[in-house]
Length: 388
Ligand SMILES: Cc1ncc(COP(=O)(O)O)c(C=O)c1O
Image (cartoon, rainbow, N blue to C red; front, side, top):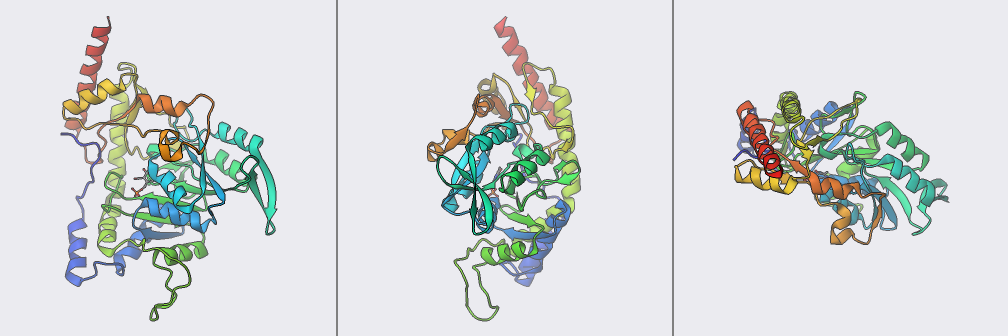
């Protein structure tokens, strides 16, 4: 089986984990945690990094620290992995789902802007201006762009919209470590960015995340909240309800080793992407995800559209090529059925109905990619012959 996306553990992972085991530093204290935080923050061009258990909890903490409450709305794209929406629901806030652009599959910013123009009224609360949804009378506190598949939408446009409507940006950059928009890293555009290091990401700690921010006070608060809000090193004194969301040293040790290899893994992903694009271009009815010219994506998971998606999915999996459909759009999941979904032509559904992800591990070999491509070509030659 050629797997969809598996970690590449070819560096110092064993050595650093052994170091944790040999020294007994396997748990929440230990030098690998701070090293990993710094490596990720430095890489993303952001001042501070706070390690946490996974990306989902990172998104939860980022919202709490942006002041999101159960009285608020948080805006998110309708196409994302469920964790984005779960993290919003943990705060009690109500999501506003925005349909995605049919070309690059990121949040549709024209649609977002027209929704805000028509539905927002500004109100002053404790000396600050906020956007309120006229219909629900809830404040729109944050917007969570998701860099879907490591691609990035127009961040300057998003920043302009967010600034005009006094909405905080929390980037769900979980899939986008290494992706650039006009030379600036994913994760560095908002109040917070959050990265994930679960098993299928470009680098992995098994499970893990890092919250990044340029604000020192917020970084300190994030550390505080993710570590049970303890105020004294000696006394068991806590000043608020905190969370045990910390990343343990043994996983951070894997993270440090993975970060050392990150430039190579990123290069491999890019090579994989350009190979697939050149070999699959013009095959059957395949359509690729559009990437803006000012974006350099990390090419996390190769996904394309075809109206034969279901047939191709079965065909590839039967041929031991692990492939997956795209995420079911959030508005179709029963937990979010009653939430606001802003759309004109439901591009999310069309993308879901037609998109398929194919093997994209950073360690995929040329021979494996050639087999994937050949199998897809054979599939289409049969489909088109059958059609005639
Ligand atoms: C878009 C998106 N958001 C959030 C997450 C959550 O990250 P984690 O699995 O580390 O909790 C993921 C990854 O799984 C993701 O792909």
